[in-house]
Image (cartoon, rainbow, N blue to C red; front, side):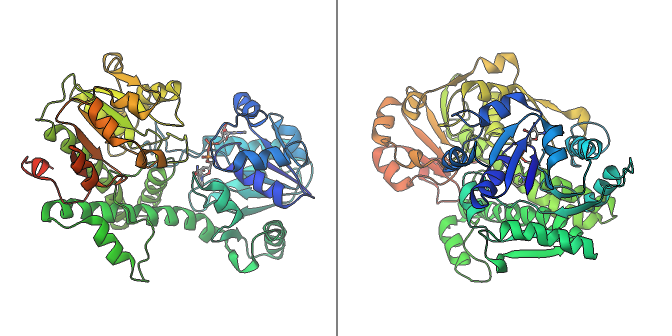
Length: 481
Ligand code: NAI
């Protein structure tokens, strides 16, 4: 059997590497239009960082796993074609800032239609709006070459940073297909691939539209949990409760569960924001305005939380950060990844730079080149129209941004340190050494509850941790939130 995956990104690369590892008899080709990305997959420095991924790729590459820019050849030879291209939020035109941009998806679908000469199972791996499978069928059969295409939805639930573990031991594999005999047969073929390593009771076969929608809903639920606990973190700060204790107490209820209850300064990443926007847009297109408004609140609370954090930082430092160096620890949207797409750190940086702070940014996996690219590129403000796109940083503001080679260098001479993602190394830093190298009073603003505030207070820091009882200094300053 030959499998081809269109899109060698965060999903296509790891997913296919694990299929190749677990199914030695299957030939897996991952194809992409990006020459740079494919070259990196074929090198010793993969284009994405995921713990454990390199070993798997090194084991399978050259055996039954290949990476290529020859999209047409591999698509035409394949029995199963996965579409795993990016489906970002539209940035212009109809549905800008809301709808999923299906340009890349459509181009992949058209390639399959153009080059296929034999029957194929086409699998939607990308996250797409519900009923995209219908459009896919139309594109595939538009040139009526008499080829039989079976369409399946097989959304991916891996989380960046734990992608390999998630793929090796998934909670579930979802396969959506049509209820026809051919549809059921195609679903069984894909099921047999996963059955090489996933227990049968974890492979769920459902209706195509349910599978498409389930992915959007799963992400919306996860994001909703974060926004829920984040909203409560604000109340904890106002009342003296501790959000970690509240989360533990609530999460012990087996009906709630403990996951995704860590308060933070806000969520980001390539999926949650765009998938909720897509869900909201689909609801609106179906006339369900109240449902759309309900899910929109998840993003509103997220924006509230990010801006609340920036206000705490600025107000604690005498309401002025002009010319003050602030160390930013962490730039990727979470630990164990170098992915900076939609990272909430950008919003914090922007907020601090608006108040004329000078930033020294350090992240173990984000290069200076990437950081500058992210900070200078245009970003869509989801709650406004496309005409209100924001330029993230002006050239003048960019002069206020520096990168550091490590956390100590970032904090040297700084007035404040903002911890903005949860890399393990930020837990283990020598905070006494950092304190001694900083201007006094020395502030720490922990946006991910990574450090123990009491230990840092004992060193002499003024500490703000999301949702934790405020120390006297921070408490004495009224913040307009
Ligand atoms: P990505 O941006 O890392 O990779 C997509 C790749 O597709 C790019 O390398 C791009 O060059 C390539 N591509 C685009 N159009 C193409 C075409 N016509 N022919 C060949 N290659 C083409 O995206 P990522 O993160 O892998 O996401 C892919 C899909 O999976 C998205 O729909 C996303 O929402 C979904 N997803 C992402 C997860 C994540 O953690 N990143 C998790 C679960 C789902």
